[in-house]
Amino acid sequence: MRPRHNQPNLGSALLTAMLFRGMNHDYVYYDKPYEVDGKTFQPGYYDENGTRYDNLMMKNADGSNTLILTCEYCGTTTKLDWKEGDAPHCSKCGAPLDIEKAQKDNISSSGSYNGETTTEPKTKKKSSCLKWVLCALGAILFLSLSRSCGKTGSPQMVSFRPTNTVQMFLPTARPTSAPAVSVPAGGTIRLGQNADGSYYLITDGSTADKILRWDANSNSFYDPETDTYFWYNTDLENPVWQYWVEGVSSDYGDYGWMEYNNGKWYVEVSDGNWREYTGNPSGFWYITDKKSDSTGLSSSSALPADSTLRLKRNADGTYIVLEGNRGRADKVIPYDPETESYYDKETDTYIWYNNDAAQWQYWVEGLSSEYGDAGWMEYNDGQWYIETKPGSWAKYTDDNGTLWYIAE
Image (cartoon, rainbow, N blue to C red; front, side, top):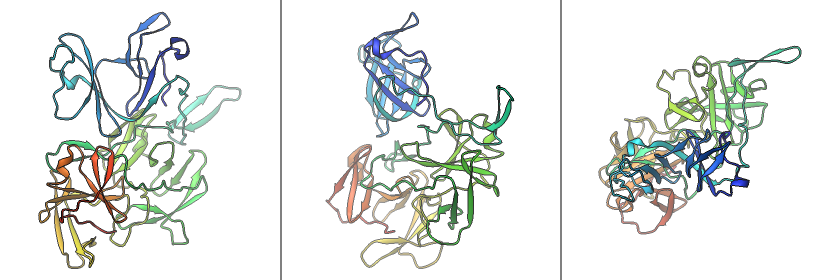
């Protein structure tokens, strides 16, 4: 959590407060006015610096939007649950509200706030990145880089609904969930390389393509071949590998750690502020959740965009993915860049591999579109599931005869 300034003493103010942790800021909502050092603050949403927001759009982890907008005609502040495409209006005078004025942020978690959860951020140091002079008897020079271990602003992947290409966030709750990677603390790790150039942790006696040691000075693993430091950040709700690439990350001052997500690289340009890295990624590499299977697909590597999906039908009616151009395909499905999905014209179905969920997902026209902002489907352990609303999944038992799925 980011350290907070210009905040009230909740014990004496008797306020009710809610905390919303975002990619850019941590917001606390105070329901009553409060006073700090003789200055009165009105009720509302305040970030960690004590800045109040009259216009704020919070995209929640379940895909919903909370919109706070102040009317420029009557000055009334309206709070509402907002769906993209709807035109918000003032709750008092009915005037249209300008969404473009809203400060936009992605919210990863929320809960009650009592002021006691504020702590100084943890730091993780990396040698050769930033020099700090510590004034003390016999001054010693240390090489370090400070960064937050508890970042909540990791990049969030966005996809498009096939029916109208309305932007939506991917589901945060699934029928099944993959366990976090088990990474040894310190010591040495052994990596094997997948066909797509990514790496996976070796947990048996298999031959390793990379053997990397823990660097105690930087509190990270280090790859001398590519001059890359990396570690597995388990302080996040969804743990993730993070990388420091010398010659690239060091361009961002006190920040510069990088993440790989769904075919794209992201870099932290300021505290909790991540942007897509658009430079040359040659020489970069990343770690997937597991070794690729026989089809060449792994739980954390997506198919390349603008490719063609070639499938072979099994005797039970399921399909498997044919690697490259080998083997006769029973389905050849082109990629549709408008929806960022593969489209099977025969069954009017859009499909894609959700890298974050390690799961194929399906959009069946005439069925999925009945669920508004949701509707994506998954097949797990002999059972179909459908997203009935963003982030909420339910069993689907009414097979209309057009459902099919890809077996791993």
